[in-house]
Length: 479
View 1: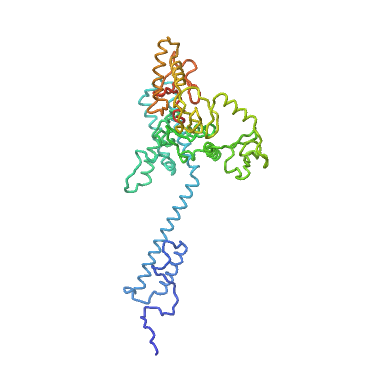
View 2: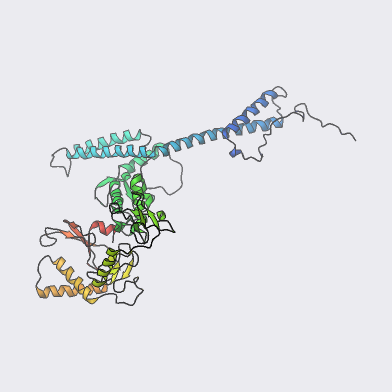
């Protein structure tokens, strides 16, 4: 049975005419098509539109023509969106790649402005320095305003300022977007504010300080110096301030590649219980655990290429039994005869001078000085009465500053001893009291920190419960 050919209107193309499919509901999502594909589609639609002109009344376009026109407008809009997106992405990549340079230039500009203000204030011998005249204040204000205007003209003036997420002035509520000028003005306002560095006690522009989890602010040089010092003194690791750890993300951006590598290596070293150091006496570099072969225990130093045995810590002996170490054997014999104890975690030899039997090694392991076991896992006495007495006498003689009469000295020793008995496991709650140096107290040599043994002429911090004297540095980072 024959079938009739389908009827077509005069405005429709015959079915054998080949044309691309522009159906919006195509299987390929529109947002995945590239800018090039969008351009090709627009060109093809343009060709079709040109071919179809004059085949219908101007005021009566067919439905297919309206659909193509709508789709063409949609493609043009999306192509403009993709172009804007590509431009924004390229700008973001440029800003990211040039970020360190922008940061350095802005920091130099801010520091230059800070130095200029300081020079303006100190370049005169005016006795009214502490209370400047109105004219002097106006001159300084004019200079600051001129610098603010110049900084506003820079497109990077407010883009590298680092402010804490929990800053009181940070916007936390959603609202209408602000213009670039408004954001710049807000950044410059924050940039002009000053914060006191908790370490050097200098007032620094807030944008050049780092806000720590303990709410202290450190200027960048002080924080960097603390990190470098920690790589040489493992008692500072893990790095913290007021018992709160300092995240690596707050530190890494201010360290060079070598400084950051040394800091991360020191953190691995302090967390390793069985450490291996290069057997080359002229080197002594810490060998990372990953560099020690599991089966042979052969550890090769990445600095001098010396091979060390990971078991006996001497030079590698190529499969032979570990030789006896006379020096180590003699040290252990002397420690045993003297009553010294070895840390169960890292093997260090420790000596108890006075106080309770609770020992805390530099590796942070806590153990009993009587039996050497982990703290609070044995039945030994927590404190030795004789050692508590010795510590009380040491505290009284240290703080007296002069020779006390026997009766007065004995009264003070008993008072301190009773306090130490109650607080022999002191966790140093509350604030330390600050003891200032004066004639008869502290002496010419000043105060000595009982943790780092450094001396300080101005003041020392003392715990109100256990009477330990520590410097400001140890109070923040070691206690």
